Image 1 (cartoon, rainbow, N blue to C red):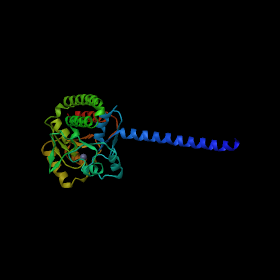
Image 2 (cartoon, rainbow, N blue to C red):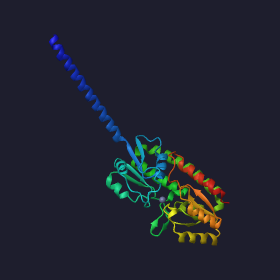
Image 3 (cartoon, protein in one colour):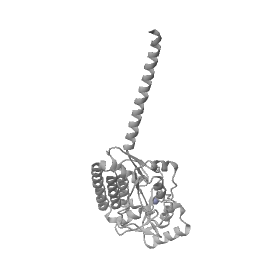
Length: 300
Ligand SMILES: [Zn+2]
């Protein structure tokens, strides 16, 4: 009997090991299955992330990730990185701003031809064109932003119907908040209508239009510092001739040119927030626009 005991113990140990391995494998497969059940949504950059975050809140089996680093800002001259492609390869849905902001979109589609792309600019009708280029910074107009929210919500409902009700509820709640914001914007900034301003950052062109402000916009691709001396002199002349007393820049811009114009003409600089970077709170866009309202209120 003692002779067999050794074998019996050995057999029991082997059976236990096999059973453990089988259980581990079952669990691993189960995890894999759960992973594949998750709908992965990738947004191109910060403003799209904030919209998606509001819409996806509470949705089941949905994972949201931003492609570019949130501090990158605008994507005009963005060079795709290996990590970006990796994120997109796993995506089921990709949310873009559109109007040429994501000039690299073809490369992303090439990397993952199965993913659905939601172009948030699809229903925008007031796109501003200049020199064969379309200004893609549509979200600085609250009305446009609301359209972007609605377009993205429709896309999510279509491509992830499992969470349709949640998307619908979130869309309604967010649009309600944005409409309140728009009312505040219109009400408090009413006096700006018809005024003239110099704008050294083209991101605010849409906001200016919404305000009814006549903007002399200088296309700088957010690089105000690259302005030539001749251009600067022209702007100063125009500001003097037209008695313009508002200079609009982004708070993250280099201020030197704006300061030169201000010193030469007595116009005042208003440092607004174009909503290109910031914290990841759901109310980030609303907070940024409220910040702008407070600053612009002081133009009177
Ligand atoms: Zn830009």
